Length: 209
Ligand SMILES: C[S@@+](CC[C@H](N)C(=O)[O-])C[C@H]1O[C@@H](n2cnc3c(N)ncnc32)[C@H](O)[C@@H]1O
Image 1 (cartoon, protein in one colour):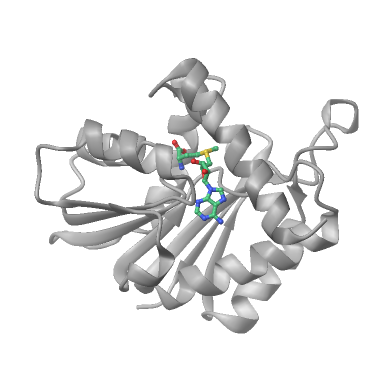
Image 2 (image 1 turned 90 degrees about the horizontal axis):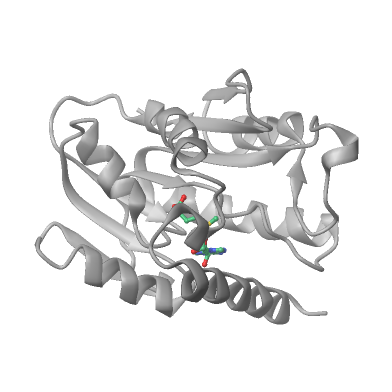
């Protein structure tokens, strides 16, 4: 199966979760708000500035991360939400229609670099793609995130150190050491691997300033 058809399957999957559950954690396939907030908290560690910053949310869903940032008093001057799924972008626009600070698009070519980029839960669902194919795809997306962020970027993955009896064939369990090494070798000397927050995933923080 080609990458295009695999990505079409991912889009169909998230289109269905959104139609079934609406703009809720389940609508973007998280079990609960708490489960997602744990991840948002880790990803936000990339932000080190006090002054307003611009944020690219890569795979934004309906942009719940914007609400999290506001709830934690992070002062973003511009929030750019990118998602491959147009129905997610429409939902994000509907929810965040009141502010000129928001831009949403499903067209990667329209994006310009932001201070920070982040991706939450974007690579977890691989469906029928093989492990190696999905790793190649993840690496391609990390390169995009690198080129679209000035000060740094953060990203999370399910971990290959999950309990074997709970692992599912449709999910992608990344190798933290491989991706840490890739980021350190290709993007920045300053890379943090956070794998100590009690859920079955890990976060990479790539600092460039
Ligand atoms: C698990 S949801 C998470 C949404 C949001 N980040 C959150 O945590 O609430 C994954 C989202 O990533 C999107 N997505 C998957 N692969 C993508 C890609 N390569 N580029 C952009 N968006 C992608 C999906 O359409 C879906 O909306």
